Structures are given as structure tokens and as C-alpha cells.
Image (cartoon, rainbow, N blue to C red):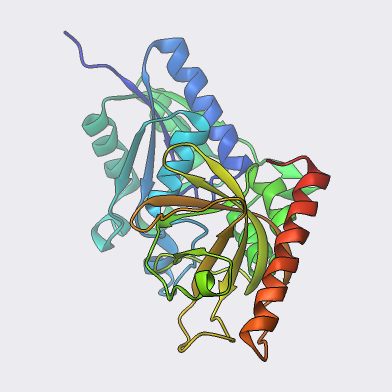
Length: 302
């Protein structure tokens, strides 16, 4: 019995934005047409980190990207390749040939600006020629534009750094998200009358503008709750410079330590402040909760 073929979208897919959505939807269409498995090939490390020697702060971790691809597009076959110097210096034809053989690929989908292989010599146009010569299907998806601007992960990173979650959501096509295991925190929220869950941004992932956000927290069992989330160094109660993510779930009581949770960021409410007392902080948390409720009621969001 012949091995099932794969239709593969190749890219980094940081943020899994509306430009990436065009690739992923085309991948699903081509797979359905041919009875193949829709798949995604991505990389664990951003290529620019090695190519240019810097560090690109990512919108999502590899696990975060995989979760978005599976949850929003229903593509379960997500393969991460380890991007290292060997891969960086590999001739582009060798990279494609080995990928096609390893994954039994029948069709490849990439974006217009896709480049790969040694010195980025493999381009979308060269890939089309290679596929035509080797009886492989190939789609090159043109740039997706919004308000006259090409949608890009770089632009979205800037929005997140400014705390502009509403604009980021337009370009992403979904709220910016953090998925993590709930950590045991300082339990100060409970003492303040506003129990919180504590999470962290994974290493290498961009930390949005410090401040308070209207968010929604989704739990493993499918339940979701409106929430207020503080991103920052906890200037009133903190004892260090580490960035924490503390979410106060509205209308929820219970213990979530050790469980997976997903925080979806909807709107920036205010900057992070230092209060003179716990009582002042507690009163502000109550005001933030009311502001978040009003925001969601106004927008019709759950």
C-alpha cells in the first residue's frame, strides 16, 4: 500500500497571522483535492538569529505556533526542523530534495518572499521551477495586505511592543495569545481579594508593553473567562525584575496551579503603576475588572 502523500506549507509562521492564514488555507484545499495530508514545516529557531547573529524576539514559541495552527486551522501534522549551521549552509536543492523524500511531499505551498538554503539562494520562483521539473505541485501565495500595508510578523511585533492589542488582532486574525502552565505565585492576589493565576513568557518570546490588559483566559476543559491581566514587574508587591503575567479571572474561583491555560489579549487598559498601599492596589484591581467588563460588553466579546 502506497504511503499517503503530504501537501506541505513551509515557513516560520511567527504569530500565525492573516498572511500565514492564506498559505494554510491553500494547503488544506490542495490536500483535500488530492487526498493528501495537510502539513506544516517550520523551524524551532528563527533563521535570522544565525544568519545575522542577533536575536529576533518571537510572537509565539514553537509550541505556541503549533497550538495556533492546530486549533485555528485544523492542521495536526506540524513538523519542526532544528535550524542550525548545517541547515543554514545547505544548498537549496539539497534541502528541498531531502524534505520531499523524508515527508513524501506531493505539493508545496510557500509565501512570495520565501527564501531558503545557503545565502538564501533558494527563492519562491526557483522552488516553482524545481517542482515543475520533478512533477511536484507548487503554490506561491502573494503578499496579503491590510490598509495598504503588507502583513508581516515584524510589523505585528511593533504593535505588541506598543501594547496595541486591538490593531494586532486585526493583523493576526485572532487575539495575541500566551499559553503556559499556571505557576504557583506569591498568593498576594488572594490576600487582596482578587485571586490570580501566574504565568511567564517563554524565553525568546517578545514581552508586550508592561501594563494591564482586558483578556480572556481559556482552560483545558474548554471553559473561558473574562479576565484582567497584568504584564510587568509588579512594582507594588514585586521583589525582583523578572516579568510576570498575572491574570485575575472574573467570576471564577478555584485552584488552577499546574494546569495549562491560554491568555488571549484584547485591549490595553493602562500602564503599570506603583501604589502606596495594598488597599490602593486592591481598589485599582476592582476598577480594572469593571473596565474590562465594560470593554467586553461594548464589543460583544465573551
